[in-house]
Image (cartoon, rainbow, N blue to C red; front, side, top):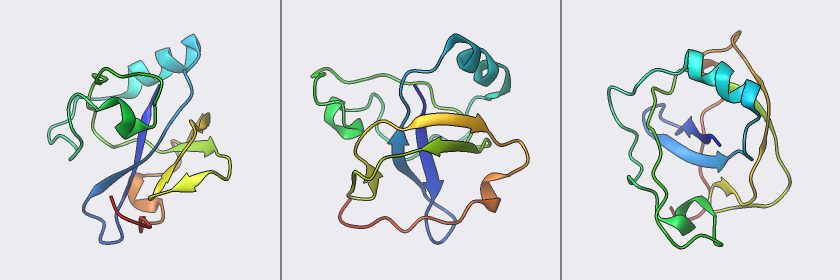
Length: 113
């Protein structure tokens, strides 16, 4: 699974917006070759509280690997959206090597964080 973020409307803060459904083996391998360790950690708790990422069926905190936010992915989402996040897991459609994070429209979260 990937945790996805977008830069805020000032282009400075990486805001969590979604998590993907579990990735296929080929998707995991593709990302494994392209991801780099993060120099500066995103402002997200480590480990994630279970409810923070919307996984209400898990009670234990979820560890994750922080990586540099350098890749852009195209996703498929449903309409369930609240507090600046997609409520349900999104589906990874494809990697977008033709785009840089700065090419993606900035994010203005709605509601409290």
